[in-house]
Image 1 (cartoon, rainbow, N blue to C red):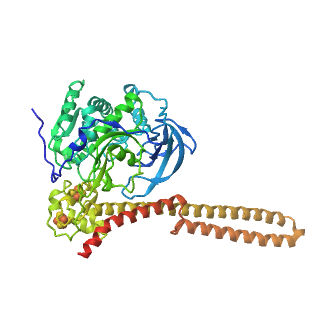
Image 2 (cartoon, helix red, strand yellow; image 1 turned 30 degrees about the vertical axis):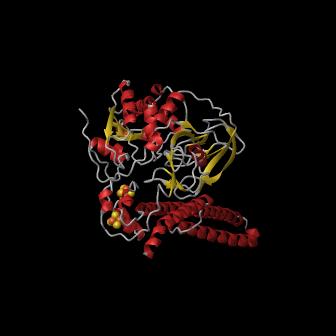
Image 3 (spheres, helix red, strand yellow; image 1 turned 90 degrees about the horizontal axis):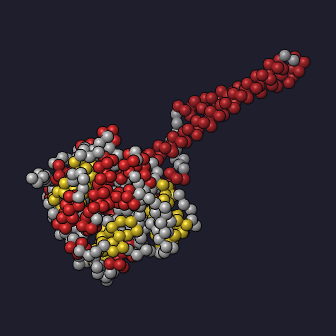
Amino acid sequence: MSRELFKFKGGIHPPGHKDESNSRPIHAAPLPKRLVIPLRQHIGNPAKPLVNVGDRVLKGQMIAAASGTISAAVHASSSGIVSAIDMQPVPHVSGLPDLCVTIETDGRDEWTDHAPLDYQAMTPADLRMQLRDMGLAGLGGAVFPSAVKLDPGAAQTCPTLIINGGECEPWITCDDVLMRTHADDILQGVAIMRHLLGSSEILVGIEDNKPEAIAAMQTAVARMDFAVEVVTVPARYPGGGAKQMIETLTGKQVPSGKLSTDIGIQVFNVGTAYSLARAVHHGEPLISRLVTVTGHVLRPQNVEVLIGTPMHTLIALAGERDGTTGVLMGGPMMGVPMPNLDVPVVKATNCILVKSAELFPPLPRALPCIRCTRCAEACPAELQPQELFRFAKADDFGRAQEYHLFDCIECGCCSYVCPSHIPLVDFYRYAKSEIWARERDKRASDLARERHEFRQFRQEREKAEKAEKLAAKAQAKRAELAAAPAESSNAALSEADAKKALIAAALARAQAKKAEATPKNTDHLSPDTQREIEEIEARRAKIRELARKPLESEEKT
Ligand code: SF4
Ligand code: SF4
C-alpha cells in the first residue's frame, strides 16, 4: 500500500528545464592553477586559519579549524603552496569580499594521510567532532554544519529521518544525477545518519519528474539491511524545501520559530548523505561537490568540482556562448547573482546558471501593488507577502516581524506570480539583513561598552588602592614621627602629606564608586569590532541598494 501524501499550501509550477543537463555523464572539472577557498562556507562562525603564506599544503589537509559550536573546518582541495590569506570576492548576495586562503596548485594533487573511520566503534560525540573537523555541511543550499544536525540532543533519538531528493528548483539536476549514479553511496551515508540519530522511520522523498533517480534509489534500498521507503512526491515548487517535504510526507507542519527536530524529524539532502559516506568510509573531508552548469552554455552538464575552483573554469568546460547576460549561483527562483566569474565554487554551489536575454528576458518595470493577493495564495509559508512588502518598503521592521518575516523561505513564489512584477524577495532579504545588522550592531556596541566600563572600573580601583597604600604609609610615618618630638617641623610636613594622601584616597574611592554606579556610554570600539561594523554597514548598503532599485522605477510610473 502506498503512503498517504499531504498537500502543502501554495506553490507554483514553473517550467522545469531539467532535461538540458541531466542526461550527460558526470565530468570531473580540471584542476585549476589557483584555488580560492573561503573560510565562511557554512552557517555559523567562519573557520580559523591554521596555515601561513608560503606553507605547502596537501589535498584534504585542514587549513582552517571550526570555531565554536556551529561551525565546520575547511580543507585544501588540492596540493600546492598557500600564496595569500586575504579578502577575496566570494559568491554572496552582498557581492562583498570575505577571508579566503589562496592555494597555487602544484598539479600533483597529492593527498594528506587519510583513512576510513570505524564509526560503529566510536562514541557519537567523537564521531560528530570528527565530522565537524572534516568540514561536513548540508549541500542542499543551507550549508548548516552536519555535525550539529546529527545530534539528537536531549531527546537522544530522532524518530523520523527524511532524505530530501526533491530538487524542485528549475534547471538544477545535481541531486537527480547523484541519485542515478551513486544511490548505494547515498544509502551508506543514510546508515551513518540512522546510527547517530537512532531513527526508526527513514523516508527518501523524490519528485515524480525524476523517474531514473527513483528507480536507482529503489534498487539500492532493496539491498539494504534496514527499512528505507522511497516515496514519489508530486513535482511542485518549492516541494523540495525541508518544511514542504516534511508536510508532504508526514502531514506535519513545523511550528513557526521551531525546528523540525522539535516534532521528531530531521531532514538531509541526498548530497549531504553522499559526502558523509565519503568522509566515513574513505576518510575524505568535504573538498568537492557536484555542480550543475546549465542555461546559456553549449553543453549543460553536471561536474564534480573541487571547492575553490573559479566559476569561469566550469563555464568554459560547458562551452561559453555569446550573449550572456549574467550568472546565478543556484536556480532562477532562489539563485544569487554573481559579481564576477572569478568567484570560487563553495560548498553551497549546487548550480551555475548562465543567463541570456532569450532564456531570461528582463523583467518589466515594477508597478505599484494592486493588492490582488495572488502572492498570498502562492506562498507556501502561509504568509501575507503583500503586507511584508509594505512594511519592508517603509522600514517598519517591527511590523514585518509581527507578520512572521523570518518564516519566509525566500522561495520566490510570490514574486513569480505578482502581476506588478515587484521583486518581493529582494525586499524581504533587505528587511532581514537590516534586522540582523541592527541586532549585531547592538551586540557589538553592548560588548564594547561593557569592556570600556570594566576597564574604567579597574583603573579607578587601582587608583584607589594606590592612594590607600600611600595614605597608610603616610599614617605610619606620622606615627613614627610623633614618637620622636624633636623633629617637630618634619612631623608637621609629614602630617600635611598624610592629609593629602587621605584626601586623594577618598577622592579615588568616590570616583571608583561613581564609575561602577553610573557607567557612561562610549564608542570605544576595538579594531575588530569596528571592522565588523563597517562590514555590516557595507553589506546593508549593498542589499539596500538592491532592494531600492525597483522602487525607483516604481516611482517613475
Ligand atoms: S501579487 Fe503583487 S500586486 Fe498582488 S498583492 Fe501581491 S504584491 Fe501586490
Ligand atoms: S518568498 Fe517568502 S513570502 Fe514569498 S512566497 Fe516564498 S515564503 Fe512566501
